[in-house]
Each structure stands twice: as C-alpha cells, then as structure tokens.
Image 1 (cartoon, rainbow, N blue to C red):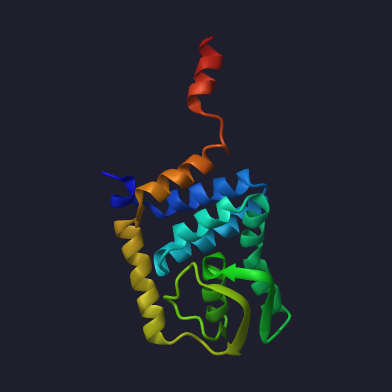
Image 2: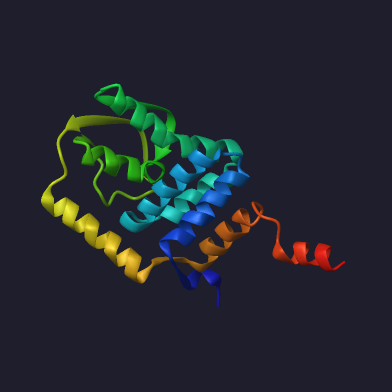
Length: 184
C-alpha cells in the first residue's frame, strides 16, 4: 500500500521544528525561519493543504523558501505604515502569512476577502486591509481549532511528512555520524 494512504499525527512543536529546520537549510536566518514555522503551523491548524503548500515551496529551491518566509514581514510592514493594502513582489500562498493575518486582525486590521479557512495553497498578490476586529464567533472557532491541535495533534500525510523530514534532516548532523566519529 502506498504511503499517501496513511497519515501521521504530529505535535504542533514537531511540525514547527521541521519547518524551521527546512528553512534554515534553505538559508533563512533564525528569526525568519521561526516566523515561517509559526505561520505554517498556524496554517496547518486553521487551513487545509498547509504542508503540501510548504513542500511545493521547498521544491522551488532556497530562494523560493526565503521569499515564502519573508512574506509575513511584508504584511506586517504595510500594517505598521498604516497602508490600506499590501502588495507582494510575487504571488504568495496564504500559508506563508496565515498567523500574520490572524495577528493583524487581533490588532484591528483585517485583510478582506480571506476567510479563516481559505486553503494554505491559495495565492494572493495583494491584500486590502480594513479596520475591524474579529467577531466573537470567529475567535471562538479559532480557539477551538487551537485547543484541538494541542490535544489531538496535527494530522498530515505520511508521504508529505517523510518529504519534510528528509529536507529538514540536512540541518543537523546525524547521530549515527557523531557516534561513529566518537567511537572510531
């Protein structure tokens, strides 16, 4: 039976760690890699196809990963400068800015036309921002998804998990190599 018929349940921090390590392998700084991991982990909890989205980015190479990881900074800078719209240099998957969107909404500046459940693979080139706060129902639904992920984990496909794990493994030296050097 094929790996794509099986799922793996990951802890939130485990998924975040694998994304972080993959970003570091691709040349991202510590802060950029952390921010990317936070956005993608948020997307995995709140949106569909988050890991698939990131694996497509990884397949695009190091520059693709760095552009994906920096997208949240573009949104935050536009918000800080009080702009009513955000323009990205190229189309950005929602998975790259998922947490940044939510945090912006918590500060009263919500992007229009992006639902909480919009797929992580959906692409945007620009975002319009309006001054509003998330509704109580929206906050409650988000809190429920967060609680479920903390208790039950995040389910991803086994094949996708293995691909992410393989990419992330280049970040650290394998224990087997260290053991052979110490005992040899």
